[in-house]
Image 1 (tube, rainbow, N blue to C red):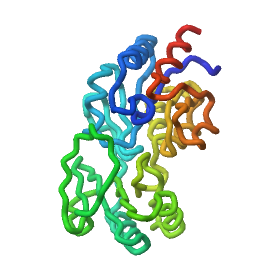
Image 2: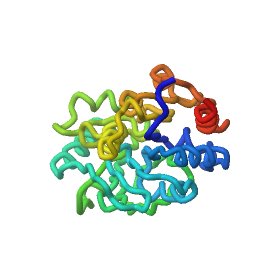
Image 3: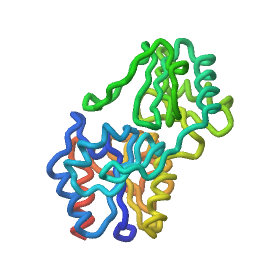
Image 4: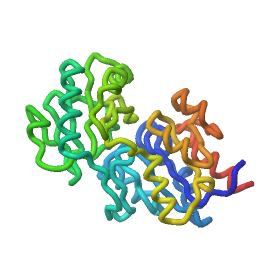
Amino acid sequence: MSAFPELIAFDMDGTLLRSDGSLSPRVRQAVREMKNQGCTIALATGRPWKAVTDTVSVLGVVDYCVCLNGASVHKADGKLVKLNAMTEVQTRASAQLARRLIPDVGLAADMADGRHIWDEHFTHDFPTDFSMMPVRVPDALAALDGPVLTWLLDCKDLAPMKAIEVMSSQMPDGTEVRPSGLETPEIVASGISKGSELDAIATANSIDASKAWVFGDGLNDLEMFSWAGHSVAMKNGHPKILSLASDVAPSHDQDGVAVVLEQLMAD
């Protein structure tokens, strides 16, 4: 087992939270104990900031939140640390490409100011506790009035990974399309990920990557798994994540995060 961590980052859905979106008392206590040991605590999630605040409040020990898979970074009090928006040219060109290559695609923009602008026919599989009030419009691209952090793509009858395959080789310079952690692929500025922003947080706090632990379950966790000194995949995770992990925890519905942290502290 690697050195005792100085920074621990947790994915939320499928990792820290149970299937019903709840945070178990056991997991909450284990994370709090790690904070008491001097660890910097981060959440690293595909959720926007407004859908993270309840968990931050319940935990009470979070230092940083990497949101939208790296597109924004916040302190626990909501203070913005960093925004990674696309340029206007990148935003428009990538959306136009999606509309050209994916029949009847539904677009949803996560705006830099925290708003969400969705095509009327955009549908999703977001967790039920998402506290979002999107503006639905006939044409999300035409309705834009500011910088965009991410585009989410409702690909209708095209499988998400197939849509990513179709688009990847034609993406405008400075953008990429990738799994978001949900059934809606996302378009973001190139090189922005949970891993890139955790690296920035670690650097700002003089923490080496070898002293970082990360917990996750999905393809949007790949970059932070590659970055951290120790990675823990949930048993319910994607096969690729399971194959890369330093360790495998019981599932999120079996309080896997707590099981691993309790063992770490016992050792």
